[in-house]
Image 1 (spheres, rainbow over the protein chains, first blue to last red):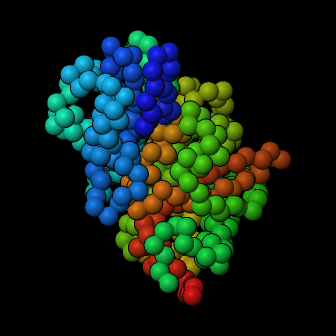
Image 2 (image 1 turned 120 degrees about the vertical axis):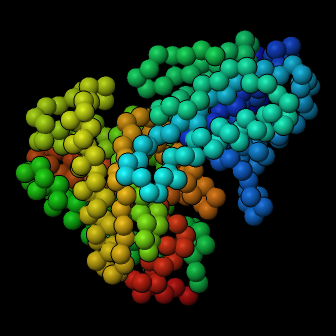
Image 3 (image 1 turned 90 degrees about the vertical axis):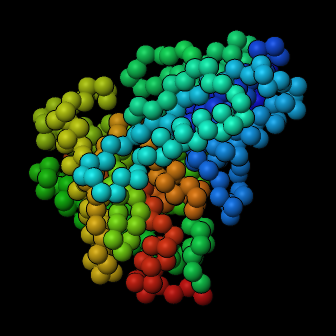
Length: 151
Length: 208
């Protein structure tokens, strides 16, 4: 998780099934970018709270509020949650479903925290590099063999 | 002592895995050489256990485009095997099987993708065969899946799958020498911790 002010740019490289959660306070030009890997933290894993959607989002909001950001001003954009491998043959299909579970979890947490998602680019089967410009709040998504996308 | 984390493995246990890696690479080279009908030699494989982020930078950075073939292991040993192929390796496969080379992953067609899955599948199966023969364990393999994309995203998959258990992964780097040209490819082996212990027990490795 990283937080910065204008004119900084936050970047996270090659999100696969992971999700990048961008929170922006347009008045302060304060940007926070969180990179989560898994949907929920279980009791016995207190290692890195930013690895999990449920704990990571809550902690990022807390940290940004500590920097003076106001929750009602937050503009939220999310990207990632791809399903990288299409496994054939049915049977054990848990592999690769993590992306969808991450999306669900991030959306549930944001709903619970009463933050609306302004734009999103989730799902698909490709990885995304996310850059988040703190001066404009613009999110740029680069992926291999695809056009650059601005959120 | 049971292993509760990849870091816990003793040097001896690592050596055992290296040996499996060697045998697997040997089998793989033979299988590959039969499939491609070319002479293929192998270098000594390197088995490393490292952090997820370190592994990515060691393999060429998160935005490097690679082709990854993923197989799910089930049965007495559960886990994931991921075989990463870079352009130089891919060209050797394509040249022999489809009769053309590519300069960029963009030009991969359906035939090419299918050839890569097959090559990956053969290599993964050779490793699993080596483990299975050594230990007498039955391991089932799923149908392989392929993804041609940025390395960071591909590596997300095994990490997320076992993210609750470990932040480390095991890479087996192997060199194949084909027509005097050295190509490097990587295999990522991620058994879950329970299976790793079972494997060690079956191999008769006792650590104190």
